[in-house]
Length: 128
Image 1: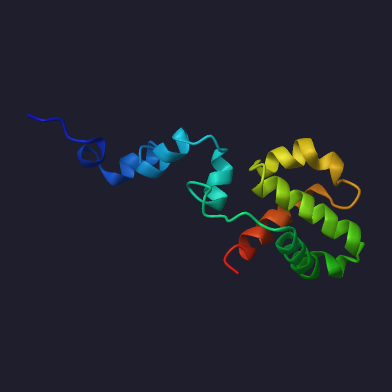
Image 2 (image 1 turned 120 degrees about the horizontal axis):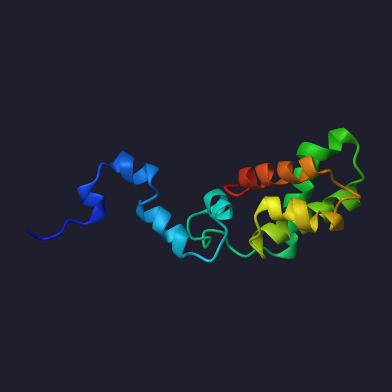
């Protein structure tokens, strides 16, 4: 008898629980962090490269949505947002890495909780 492919031999729930689905295998082959891929797409290619103007527009929108009510300084906050966004999108670092290792560059403008909020709103911005 010919051997069945794993996908056909096992229950789909078992495959999912054991991380044997095709998407899990794609993540394992990828050179990107798993949590980043889960947040932004299985191959990371879904996100087009952003221009400086797009980063500025997103930072301005995010400032108005989140930080304006808190009376944060607009220019420094928007610059910090752009730094976080570019690190997320261009370097493709996980947010936990940014919070732990890049935070010193933005800590004067944002709290660590703010950095997490930036990713939350970035995911809302992506479909726009």
